[in-house]
Length: 425
Image (cartoon, rainbow, N blue to C red; front, side):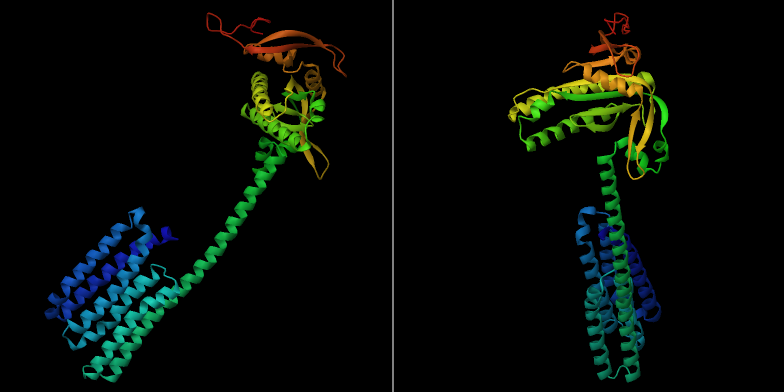
């Protein structure tokens, strides 16, 4: 709220200074003899306004800005009333009395957006002092009953107008505040909805849904992608040895870490299957086949490295049996898109190549990564892959040659990575 007031306070300072300039010109024209008497105090007050205006540019002093400006406005009205009564000698000086109220009230309460209660309280010194002055001048015979009444009415109207405007501004601020609260509530609900979507839907798929591009994933399409399957070897035996609560914590930590590694490599973790997972590279965001294979193998290596870290952590918690993960990777053309019922859909990849990736994962040794020959041909320049033999996959009428990921490929003397199988394969 203070930040919104700062520019308004600057406007108020300029307006008040302009009012004092008009006041000086009026006195100088109508009562030149009194000009010298009022000038020092007015100049000093203009200096105060200049200081307050400068403070608006010092962020560290903003907390005292509003109280100082309110005090300055009180002093402004009291100064004008005192000068009009004591320093100006013209019988027409009382015509300037409403100005003493209008300057601080209209440029103070309205521009600074004081709340109605402080605005009413701040106006009391003006009303009280001006009424005392009018009464004393009436008793001295300087003004008539009609003039005293009219001047009192003008001052009361000026103050009441300022308070009324403060009420209008307060009501408007409350309505604006309520609207801001509703907007903020809607933003929080939208943010929570987005977070919930990302918890139950792969982030890349969730982003498409949030951006209103769900139609791009609704209809299944044929696309060449790389599929990664991974699971924990011997998990059934481990699950029988630990408490259900510890098992749940273990799985949450395992899946969270593996999902992070997949997403860091540009993959889409689309499915958790018991103690395993399935990830896609090249869907829904398109990716060149070679990049798919390289990123999938890189993610798999990061996952195996993370598994060692998790084992050390679990060992300190009393889970003494080290866990190992098997990973299988295959590249091929599948049908990828949303599958399921009208009420619930899952983004996944279906087809023979998906089945091959799953079979490779089951055929892998614990702690190893094996890839199909299709993935091998795409990633052999980037990794050292060793032939592992052939795997018979259900539904495939031919054995699938497989390779085991050994390490990153090392550049030869020319700086190029070797592509000879068994060396830089």
